[in-house]
Picture (cartoon, rainbow, N blue to C red):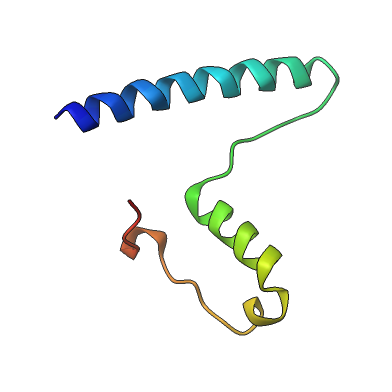
Length: 67
């Protein structure tokens, strides 16, 4: 239970920081959006494996064991 509480606390703090940065950059005319887990995985995977990604299927993120 303590791990879950810590996770929620840190997650809320991170989201507050993201909101602060988004607000600051929005003032410069930029439009930002937070990536979802699957989008982050694909971004990193294609960055490190550009020749492999075209031929592979990453599958559904809900089926992955992310800890």
